[in-house]
Length: 236
Image (cartoon, rainbow, N blue to C red):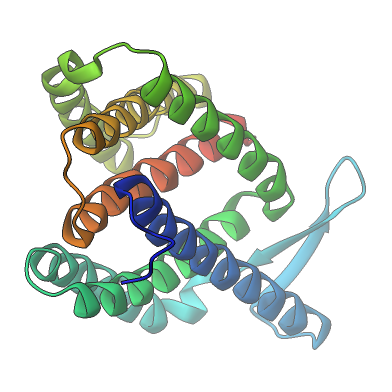
């Protein structure tokens, strides 16, 4: 495609960086939009002050319920279409990935607003440092992390089950934090596993854009879920 992106590393990181930027841009736009609604004194958007004196926006999600259902439906449909298209068409996959990344950014903005949007930059920095560390370890340590595959799979199932329980059972905050910490451990493991997988495919001579797309989707999911679990772990 481009001479500059001849390696699997370059292809994967190009796709991943673009999609993470789209998610970031969408989240920032939505946060600014709600701040403008607050300044315009929209009845569904109020604010409080944190202990540090920062403005913390509070939104009435019931006022945006229809939009949330549409957003949820779009998120699910786009993700499923992306998984299907990633095996057949690079350009369709890129379009779907970009749309899904934007929708994910909107979701992240809403999650931040429901917790404390001021945590966003701090959690983002921590996520970036952890991701970079996992990339260096997974690629350059010489350790084969393939043994994590089955462990991570069953850990993810357990995490999904615990997350479902949280939806229906009221838990003490420390228990929720334990689940969030477990999620952080799981997705750190997945980052090590996926970066290690990228390194092994690169050394095996695999160098297709379709493979890069699949790897980028996997790492993107790892990063986003790590961010959300860190946010839940560090919020009040």
